[in-house]
Image 1 (cartoon, rainbow, N blue to C red):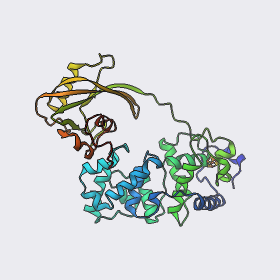
Image 2 (cartoon, rainbow, N blue to C red):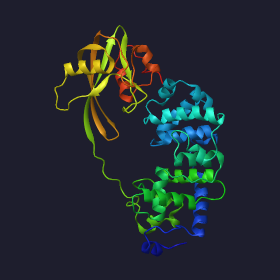
Image 3 (tube, protein in one colour):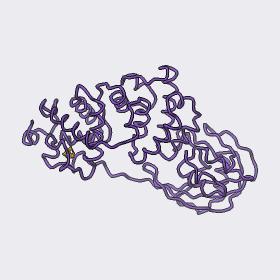
Image 4 (spheres, protein in one colour):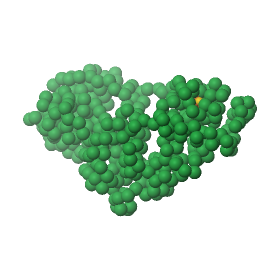
Amino acid sequence: MSTATDRKQNLAPPAAHFTSADKQLLRRRLFAWYSKSARDLPWRRSRDAYGVWVSEVMLQQTTVAAVRDYFKRFMEAFPDVHALANAPETRVMRAWEGLGYYRRARQLHAAAKKIVAEHGGALPPNVVELQELPGIGRYTAGAIASIAFGQRAPILEANTVRLLSRLIGYREDPLATTGQRVLWRVAEEILPQKNVAHFNQALMELGSLVCTPSVPNCAECPLSAVCTAFSLGLQSEIPRPKARKTYTYLREAAVLVRKNGSVLIRRCGEGERWAGLWDFPRFGLDAEGPLYARDEIVAKVCEQTGVTCAPTGLLKTFKHGVTRYRITLECYEAKHVAGRVHLASSATARWVKFSELSEIPLSATGRQIAKLLPGDTSRSKKS
Ligand code: SF4
């Protein structure tokens, strides 16, 4: 085993990061830990490639706690690739509503269609073909190939980036091109010849439960004997902290235009924040402009939908965050005055009964606004 002194003198990562003995120890201890500590997660009960794929896509940038129930509901609604491929996009988006990063759902749907059309409904078992499917990058391909098909494919995601960076004492930016190259090489270097499915899952589990971002539990870690960050006391410095986020503050308006028990909604087009979801007419307002900018509201609703409305008041103000934006959203009520809905760019607009809103995939704040409507049934229904 390489010593702490060796590592102190050579902090730049060498070509091979572990001796054979280190790797054997790492694998043995990791397997032993995982057999005792693995959580019982719904997607771990089967090695079915479709379930592995859905769970891995849901888990991208989303916590296990948030994904659990979504995964169960999604698998009940779309139990296999054919069911997903044949479903209307509205149903898929409604099942995904609230999980965020909606592009994932649209790509999953598109990939299911491609798998049916080009692979007879079965996911291909190798990383090259998997990466040709929409929304499947190197990590997701490696996870599916190793977990579902037992292929000797490495993985690298948020938890293992942190874990591997600490294990080898990598002090540069792990997300930069060089950092990624180094860590992918490490992920490959430590792979065992057999049982790669468990090994990869164990690495992610250890990163998630023990080698946590701010206070890793090194006292309980099975890999402390081969961990450079631990031996040098650098756990809090590795991986290198990200630059502080700077936020952009926005003011927006959403308008509930009513007509005889119906309300006006529009589908967000490509390039918009909620692409693929439905929303009430929504637009930016001048941050310094007056509260209740009546003329601007009328003009913007007409521009987006073709409908002329008469605002009747401010219903509620929400504050919410989306990526780097901190948004103050003013929700106005309005009556329909004139005009028919028209197609605007790649988005469409339509009138829907209040009761229909529960079946329509809405943006997160769109759903909150829908709950302000009398007779809205989305309060009690879930996808
Ligand atoms: Fe992470 Fe600590 Fe384990 Fe190293 S010893 S891998 S820093 S938990």
